[in-house]
Structures are given as C-alpha cells and as structure tokens.
Image (cartoon, rainbow, N blue to C red; front, top):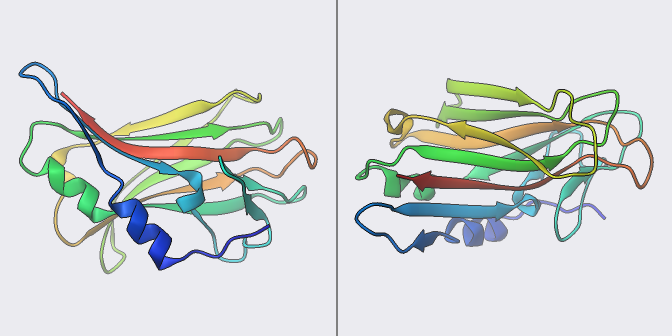
Length: 174
C-alpha cells in the first residue's frame, strides 16, 4: 500500500508539539513525528510503503528515497532560549550490502542549501532500531529557512527483510 502525501496530515503533525515541565535546572522541548509523515522521493512512490510504525523500501532491486519535513513552527520555540536544536531519526538497516543514508538539510525557502550533514549506518545491519542524531546551532534558525531530513533506504533483501525509517523528532534539552 503506497500513500500519497497530504497537506492536511502535515499540518496536523506541525502542531504535535510537546512541552515537558521545566525546572530551573532542566528544560525540554520535543516535536515527535512518525515516519508516516515522510514522503517518497521522486520516482520512488512504487517502492516506499508504510505501516503504522515505519516507512520502508519494498524494492528488492533498488534503493529508495524519502523526505521527512520538520515544520518551521517547531523551531520558533528555540529563538528565545538557550537550547540548541537536536534532530533524532530512528531507523532499521537490514541490508548486508548497503547503508541507510540520511542527511539533515537546512535550506533557504528558494532552495539554496545552507547546511547539510549526512550520516551512514555503516556496520549496522540487523533488526534492531538504531538512531542518527544531529545537533546544530540556534544561529541556523530563522525566517526563510526550510528544515528536513532525506534518507536513502537500501533495497530489501526479501519481502520480510526490509530496512526502514521508524520515526524522527526535533528536541531541545538544556
């Protein structure tokens, strides 16, 4: 079952912000998102499938790409705080021949890249959930910027042994 992206689903996810109680010594912010908010890359709609917990590649012959948006509204809370934003992405890499490859992007609204950082699942090939974590400066937060993570998911080894993106979140902690 493939799923076409919808603006309504993204709009709802943009407001799924969790503010955790803060004390003088510790404050937190978290915006969690299921991988079902990720959309298939151009030409990959037939290869990306979703279930209630993941976006996964069904192709046994080629890698497929997904794009996972982070709404700008989520970053507004970082403008008047000492917290630096942290993005976590959970994945499973069951491919013995290729890595899950994910890149955090900070671009201007016109598409001009500002920052990108790529992580690979090198050496991790099992059914366990693993994480990539990106921390970046509040200096990269501001109007006119678009934030996202793109991931290339390796081809499936079989119909039951597939790599996947499980979830991602924006958080802040001080």
